[in-house]
Length: 275
Image 1 (cartoon, one colour):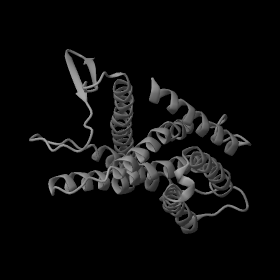
Image 2 (cartoon, helix red, strand yellow):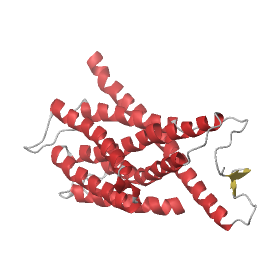
Image 3 (cartoon, helix red, strand yellow):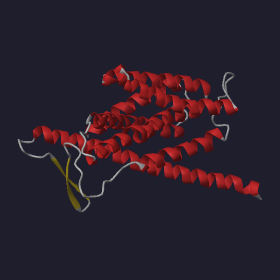
């Protein structure tokens, strides 16, 4: 009886995780792009404002009108401070659970070729790519190369191309695509919890204690948030590629197609950020 119910239970678990992952991702990406758009509009308002004027953005949504202004520094107000963090946590946890369910506990990870890995070795390599992806990315942007935004972006793209080529030689095409997306998704998640949120907490703590606020922390957090907006679009591309086997992961030149999709995603994100 249990063996008869297990496939059904696995399918319902898959459905629940997939729904959670997509819904949480919508919340995360939506807030990320909204604040990126808002910051861009406020920057334009600051540039065009007359002396003594405070830059504001006037918006309408549904039946409400909203006026938003950006603080020049950290000013503590007697109101509740709203954090945006659990969307990222829910998205990553549900995505990782899907990796475990669909790849690490099944044969979907293995490569059909003679040189492919299988079993525990394949799972360890897959997990290693997620960890290594974050470490390499973080070291790059904390290095002298990362001080040049364009050079850092080119280096990151070339590393993703290398990952696309390497993983399509180790895993099945579908698993390789998903894991390149998972590398970017993991970077985005750790950016939020290890680089953006700690910087925000330090800024608030310094203000509460009356210490001088180090605004370079805000600049670094903003940089990582900007990176997340660029990675979000190609991550969604890798998710959608599962439905187009012939033209994406199943193609002879799947790694080149994935590399092109990532670049198109970056370009699309640049447009959306300004829209």
